[in-house]
Image (tube, rainbow, N blue to C red):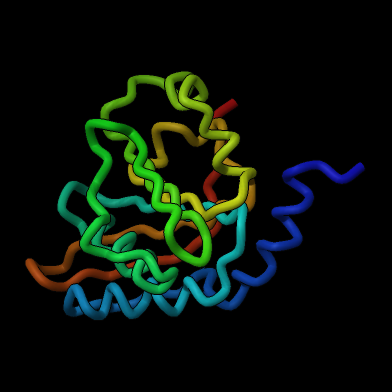
Length: 164
C-alpha cells in the first residue's frame, strides 16, 4: 500500500549526497547561496528542520530558500508569534513554521501541520525538536551553529529518533 511516508522515503534518496555534510557560511549571502543550492532539488512535500539557537540564522536560510523559489525574500519573517507564514507566490508554496512558543506537539496538530507536511509545498520548521513525534521520517535536518556574529556552520543530517 502506498502511504504518505512511503512516497517521501523514495523522494528522500535525493538527499543522500547532502547527508553528513558540513557547510561553512561566512556571510548571510553564503547562507542564501547554500539554501538556493538545496532548493534546486526540493519538491512538494519536502520538510526541512532548522535547528539551532536563537539568532543562529534559521530565518536567513528560509529567506535564501524563498528567493530560490521565486518568492521575494523581503517578505519572509520569522513566524514566532503566528506559528506559520505561508508564501504561495513562488514556483512552489513555502510554509515557514516556528514552534519556539508551543508547549506540546499536540498544539502543532491543532493547526493542521500534517496537511502542510504531506501537501503541495515545502515546509521549513524552526524549533523542530518540539514536534519530533509527528515529523515525517523523510525530514532533512539542518543544524545551524553560530561561529561568530557573521559566520555559521550548517550540519545536514537525517532526523533523529522520534519520541515514543
